[in-house]
Amino acid sequence: MSIAIRVENLGKRFRRYHADRPPTLKEAVVRGFRKTGAVEQFWALRGVSFEVAYGEMLGIVGHNGAGKSTLLQLIGGVGYPNSGRVRVEGRIGALLDLGAGFSPDLTGRENVLVMAVAAGLSRRDVLQRFDRIVEFAELEDSIDTPLRTYSSGMQMRLAFSVAIHTDPQVLLVDEFLAVGDLSFQTKCLRRIAELKAEGCAIVLISHSPAQINELCDRAIWLRHGEVVMDGPPDVVTGQYTVEMRAETQRRTPNQAPEGMASGTELAPNRNRFGSRDAEVTAVRLLPGPAIASGEPFEVEFEYLTHVPLASPIFVVSITRREDGRVCLDLNTKAMGLSLTTLEGVGKARLSLGRLDLLGGEYWVNVGIFEADWAYAFDYHWEVYPLSIEGIALSQGVLLPPCRWHLDIAESDQCAFDKELPAAAFETLPKLKVS
Image (cartoon, rainbow, N blue to C red; front, side, top):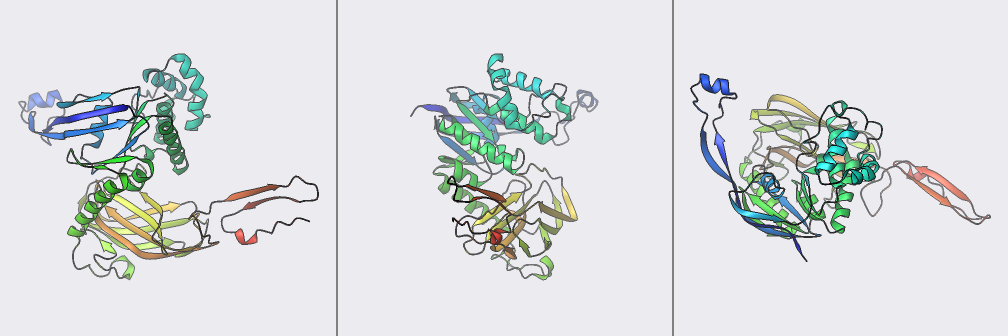
């Protein structure tokens, strides 16, 4: 199998400046150019080596600041290394900063033409693919309006669609699943899988171990700019997760404060973890701890911070009681929400338009994590029970609205067309053949 990406002993060094460095030349002159020089230098990457073959997908995990994005930028030709080298064979499609290069004063149509040509396509090729690009981005009604009228989600969908329609032989993906809603993210995943099957070499950065395990053939764990492990995805992400949990356990106090989580008893180190720099003080499941499949559902929790927290991550997940299977796992970071510094008392709420789970018993888990996932401030695991009323099947976890169409050709047989709401499977009449 031929090699698409070869990284050899790669190193990248940056300068770190004063926090109160003068922001303008005028202010620097007024201050006599004090605090304008670099305080120190540090290595964002050092001694990184690996190869990626055509048709292979490599996942990269690591905390924020580990050097993941810097590595992808160097592979994509954005900047130059201070040591080592990168060799890439084939056209590169890079999803490093979705929307970068778009002009707000041009229409969506004009931006597609400019960006696709900049990516290496001819004008004729762009025109031939234009309808597919717009259809994938789901922007048929807005493509001829100025980009400044687009929401950030619309701009990201358009940028993603352009990038994946340029026939890349090498694709670099930096946390692309923050693009759009869940249905669009599923479509993105499907397209990524198609490119891989066509022989595209893909490098994916993700904070989701489950995503790395599902999509990638191999994984690399970066820590402080160096490769800690290179191997099978489940082994690499497993070790990475263990380190995260170990750090959380190390910071977890032996005794939990009293009166937390609306009187629910939380045993430290068993179903409550975290440093307690922030605490979840109350949790409410709305409309209640028992709902019908397909009904709206909300998780609201109150929190108290003891120190200012920069860009914390709020997490809500749902696991099945019988086997611990993760049925839903959402967090503010993956959804593209960048939080400001939090102080004092506040509330967080996750609203789901409908919760299409099979009937059964579940746990709702909530927590607040440090900005780079290094450890939990407070995480409540398997504390809040949730009952879903509806049909229970032996396979799967989802029960979305669906419709069966049974059209039997022979005239002495019946035709049946029945929509099946998520919570009404019991009303399904038996199909009879006379």
